[in-house]
Image (cartoon, rainbow, N blue to C red; front, side, top):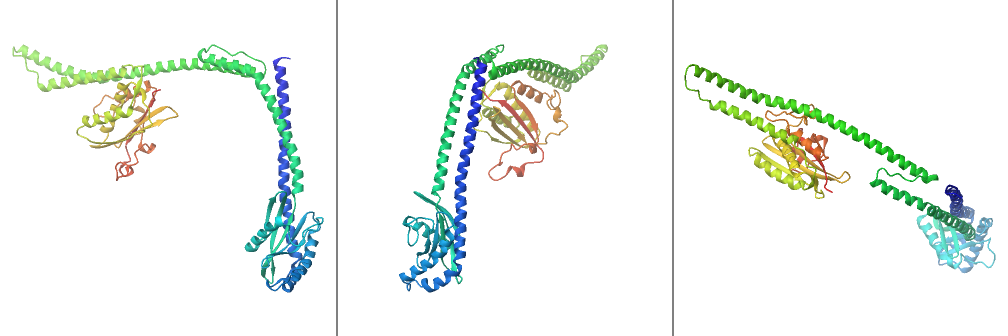
Length: 531
């Protein structure tokens, strides 16, 4: 018998066992429900019986009460027995049609059961009132009914008796004098149900155990093949060209599906790598084109100024030579202009070198909180003409980030400088950090309360040489973007209304909402944590 045939037999056997177990559980739940229905049905019987007792005794209770029972200290034993015999006729009439039903009346002032009857039980039976073990149960419920002036129906148990008991107030001339009661014994009915329940339980248990045995056999049979698949998956992790052995039956479907999935993933990865390389090359060429165009424009202006000044000096020298005069002195103002333009070109070249400098692939653990605190201290010294008030709220759970510290320092310097330059002399800055645990990222937010950023320039802020400042090369944010991208991070800008990353209070007395203007900018930087 081959493996596939064994597997079919085992699966068929398991199906049969599951079916039998399901049927057994259904029957078992039905029997449990049947026991509940027995209780509820007999509660209704007891309730109907006590209502009939009150209705049947309505014409007799008042005269019997007035003649024989009224006045606790006046009645005799003979009067009580006579009243009991008269009332028990009505009780017997009501209860004789139902098996194991008993009842009577309880009178509060006398604290006694009168008119007791249990017509369907064989002798000997109690002469007056319920049996001793039930006495206090019935008495207490009857007194509860009298106190609440409402009908009560409850299930009571004591070994071996189980009975629903119903009690209802009785009145004479509008005065509450006691309660009628009726109960029905259901222990025999429940006992029969419990025997069936026990049998069904053991049948169910047997089916479950048999099903468990078959399940263990199936698992044991499949274990070897599953182990081979598990080992094969581990090999795939280190050897992408490895493929699983293909089996028969269900495991064959699994192994073939895994092999096909790995083949598809490899094809997709190769396509994605090719597309990424092509896209990177296109972006690189586009950036290079923009960079060359911007550089040419930026350098052309200072060179033109220098050339103009030199041409002026040449004309003056030619004139002096023609007249045999002494060479004219170069004015200080012209020299200063040339020096400024040369410095301008020099600074531009330095920024370009930083832009083109490749980021080191080796990363180390960098504490961004320490780095930010250092840059905030530097900011105060770098802008002596500003009153800088910087608040920080750092996440203590934030781990170090994986970064090139010098490059990330340059990013923080650029963003903080922009925040100050966009603000008035009273400059407020909020710096917060947060650990994005699911993404394994550190999120740093730098918010200023300056002039803000219009929507039309937002798409251009990372373009080389784009700037809205009167002085500036337009390379700062481009460099920041390249640095963050090389760290597999993200950088973006938004309005304060788009984000809630602000401190709860600016100081002990002033809420930040009261000082927050309609404008301002938040820079959000996200970097991978060090692992």
